[in-house]
Image (cartoon, rainbow, N blue to C red; front, top):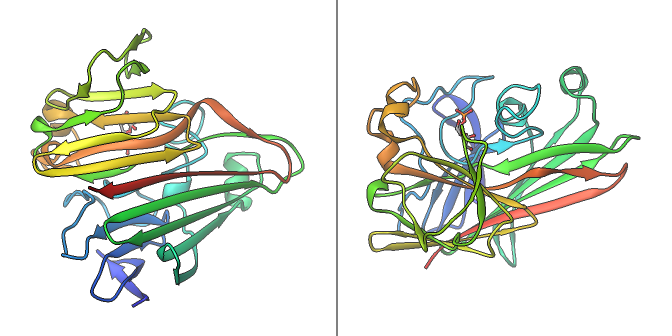
Length: 279
Ligand code: TA6
């Protein structure tokens, strides 16, 4: 370390970190964080053992970067194209904030054939102690205004989804997938003992996940929405890339910009981040 090129289930990847401390691995495809381990070696992200690890197919787990479309809210493939494109590894360096790796994705003939805007994305992922910071920068490199959605679709590894408690969302307006009715979260602690697939509009300053003895604090900056997803038993049974009990070992708490989409003037930059810290 600080960084080495490796293969993660056969996919080209970068591993970086702090000698004797935290470490992280991201595949070149998607700049997709597939591992984040604490200094004691504990893995904090869920990656499905049945995930495909193939060029052009989305990895199930880790932190997929969703851009420029969230879910099926537009004409592109589900969650856009950034997660299945090869990004360029820029560097991995030690900074005052921790060990940081950066990746870049720029528009190309291939993306322009799918989506008309010219862009440059930079994903900067920093680990330090028991904290992870993921920052997404979007630059409009074209000559027209551009509009996009984005998300860090974070899959947290949990000990038992049925016992989780996620605090910080009370009073937030949300939309459950499949419903058109907006509701207000009445619960102090959101649970995942039932399937959940919600967009909370207007992001809370922080959410706090209690997972048995573990407490995880999640903060997002400049992402307007928070998505909470657990597919539950029945949906998981229909997913080819999840083991039947996979839903019990994960919870997605996603920092997202969905509604309204971000509008960027030519030459302008948008910066947003998600931080996850073990208390
Ligand atoms: O962010 C939640 C969500 O949009 C869910 O509706 C669910 O479909 C999930 O993402 C996973 O999407 P994927 O395309 O990775 O199967």
